[in-house]
Length: 151
Image 1: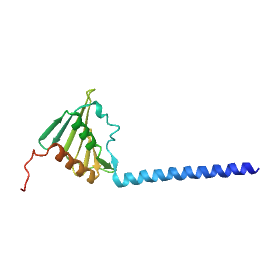
Image 2: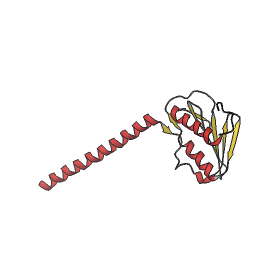
Image 3: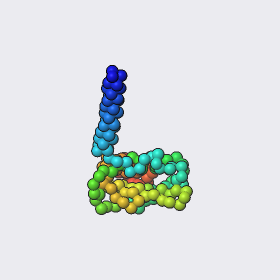
């Protein structure tokens, strides 16, 4: 009788700990998505070793990346983009990346200050990640190509 009671109590405690852990993880994930937005693409899901080139367009300028180091940088920049639930404004991309893969497929990802673009679909972008993405792209791949004001 006593061992049966001990088993019930210990099982109940284990279930409470597991339940608390699951609730904590779900709360953390929800909070993270509401604060930071949802990643457009995870770096691990992007088979960067299968990418043969990346074409980056900003306005009327285009850069073609074929070096493995530059391709990896481009893949990492794209993974910084995040979106939120809701309707995106119908607009044009300020910066657009076109990834070409060995199997002949292409993936288009771009952004402007309020919208994220992925394969023809538009998402309401997280403004901080969009600005970061655009600034990094301009600084890394288009530096020295446009006229700068100041000394």
